[in-house]
Image 1 (spheres, rainbow, N blue to C red):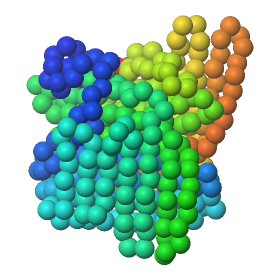
Image 2: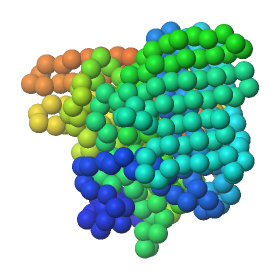
Image 3: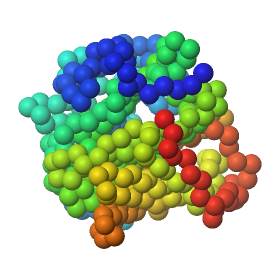
Length: 360
């Protein structure tokens, strides 16, 4: 059995989608929000005081099986410029969950994640923390092919991804213990869902996004486990201003990972450098993510771990021998279900890059 990227006419018909066209309903509820599925809506923002804010709305916590019943879950992390971090979670009752199917409008108790008049609005109130923010898209929505990666002999299982806002203007009001701060910045929103536990089909993935001047980057390296062929599916989106310059899934995207170490807390291998390269119309683009620090971690016990990192990102555009280079701080992540290393101090191929691109 192999993983299959949903890119044929039949795949688009199955998803009721049109190639190159993203409709409002696609960011609405895509599952039954019940046993056997998972779904979440994600936001992150880099704010002008140097802090990073993430907000997630889930139909069930990410550390439980998709077979679990509806268990509405909200997660907020605020990482300040000095490295201090505030993390809040809310687990609601099934009756507290609502999600529209014709648009993004998700509610978990008093918490809201919705779009109105092409602007996203997010409200979270958990304990002493209240967050109100808006996200106004600045880049057209994009979907990697149909957004679906299928598994099984009849393609009966899937994991789907819609990076609907690659870049947007953020206005945020953060209140902690009654003290309110008004901030602005730039943000991102995507949407994930599926009907199979990621650990059953995935060895690991690296996801990243970056904002460098006028450029917007969204990347994903999805490495399928050996039961489904061990395929690597790389994805890369590059936009400049409000135009998408290049966006590709699989062929033509090269990924190099290196500087691999074992994380001392989770025991999983972490590539501290992930580099993407792509060529379009005589121009070569190179994007490199580098690890600096941890933001957030979920340990799945024997099944693996999830890590969210703060890091540097370097972007190089080369055309006819001339290069333009940009650098910035960013957020990227590792979701890992492969084998853990035996020793947390091992260094695996630290100076031997592993090329895992050019596969579909």
